Image (cartoon, rainbow, N blue to C red; front, side, top):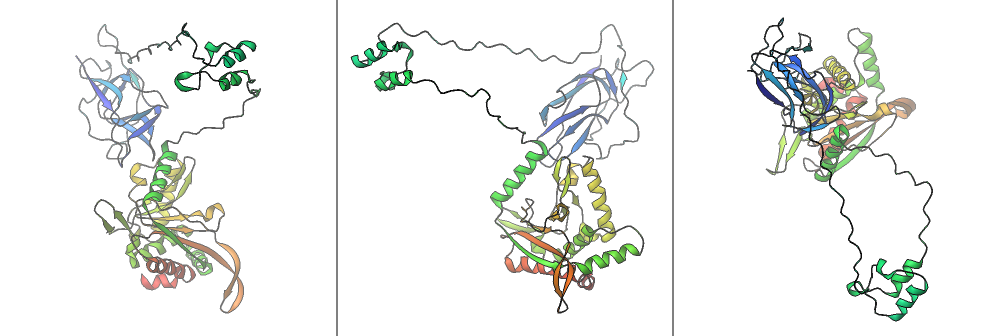
Length: 430
């Protein structure tokens, strides 16, 4: 007899507690192999294909597409062992693989197959469990008005009700112990307010869940916990843009402006490590982090995401450009894994792509700082003692005032601006 094993929604990592079923990749009766993706789910951070650690026949699925399930809830059941294999197919492996998510040690070289199993005996494969029909509960019925005396003391109130045909038993008195007063009768005589023929629209309601909900929670937590401050400066980026043009003219992969700014950031963090830190409230300590894992804000169809470039301080302009490109493409395709979106130590936010000059960014909790970059546009600028048109950018730094004072934050921002204005400053420190 085959053994029926239950596969539950696994822990997707990084504190995620639920996921929404986007698309089932198998049906009841399909034969699945070990580590074959069986369902696509969306977490607050990414779209993830979940592989099943068992090989056998799918006997039940739990949850329709669009259903949100908590971690640990049943996803499906699989019958493994004898009698679960089609006559013309070898038996699938019966033991679990131990893998949790696609991309974490699972082999994707073989295509997923959906095969309908033939029953091994007279009994058909177990059907999906049918949820019990909800039990109808009758609404409570109001008790009839009591036949006892009506709580009215004043004969004037009785006469007023009688003259106007008001049934005192239908009124709820506003006096002590429900006593019916003159005001209660007069209120019953007033005409009911006119009801508009067409009610005003209630407005569109958008569930605050998934990515939008995760962003809201994180930003709210940042505002609650971090005493932040912002400083900013305008910088002449003409020389930086000329240096980039020269790099790209020399051949090889094209270097992005974001990569050059990222390289400047990592050099600045090496000088001012206070800003590459986090605050451990439980221990009452500031933790300075040994590596720079650089997050960058990217707008996608699902909303704002912040992919993380690991060990950004060890990468040059070409390596940073390649990582930005790779992670941005994954983000637009909705294929960023939870690991791609967590563990950042400092964030670079280039909001200039939206055509704005400045902003006061909210720190990406639990980091300690974020550098914002506005658009680079021609502006009047005094250069070499003369008024000239130069490529000017506004840089803003929002920082956690617990990890440093304004002098450190200002020193960091001034060093970044100096490197933007004269890339040779950066070359001198490499």
